[in-house]
Amino acid sequence: VHTLAPDIDETTWEAITAATVFPLSLVRNYGVFAFTSALGVTAVLGGIFVTLAYGVLVDPGGGLGGALSAVSHLKMWPDSFSDAFGGSFGTIAYLFCINFLTFPILNSMKDARSDFDGAISSAVAVIWTVNALFAIVCLGFYGDETQDLVLQNLDNGPYLSALKILLCVDLLFTFPVVFSSGRQILENVLIGDGTDNKEGGEDDGASLALSRTAVTGGAVATCFGLSQVGGFGVVANLIGGVAQGTLAFIIPPAIAVALSRRNGDGSFDASEIPQFMIGAFGVAVVSSVTYFTLVEVLG
Image (cartoon, rainbow, N blue to C red):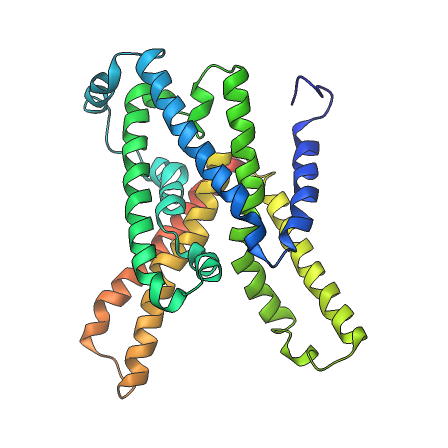
């Protein structure tokens, strides 16, 4: 892309991407993204295989055995809390605390009531295993030189350029699907669920459509603003630490305590202590990731 349009800077490309994503984010029938999602899965698998083949055969070479042997010689713990929370914990939460995908998964299933539990358990188990193994092998390949996007460790070429374009296509068309849960929550909070306008006339329908467009535009603009914060790793670490950390470690124990007291007499119970401990851990994680990531960005 830079070869074809060398005079267009990165911020302009990001603005063009935001403008492209905006109309896609207005779509409410996500069946239209089935083909592109399948293409994205194919592209991701291709990226995994290309990266592994490159590491085994080209750079650094030595096969999988050499990579796994190299992992055993790397330091397994960060040098400081700043490195741990400002450099990686949020990214780990972003990958593995996938609570934010609950609504898109529910919305895309024909019979979510009966199929959700089994589907989500199988999907998370497979993706967790693949992510962990791939991360370990790539860390063995490149050690401290491992990039935020490991494809950047590979020499560029026509095939890899095509592969990266496919990955961009995947991200472009799956963004609205993942974005849908946040958009739905914002719409319900700011303008209601739209049921009050079902009996209204054309003016009410047009007003609802404009309100939804404004909410979507504001959310996309926020995403564009976040893209200016720093590189992919910084943004993923900040979002993963704050949003996913809150969803995984703070909200669930709060819900558990609220339900426990609703079903009981409303007083404190010793069984709530583990939930408070998890919540306290979540507050510490979210605060630490936010602080150390901002220090890294602003310092």
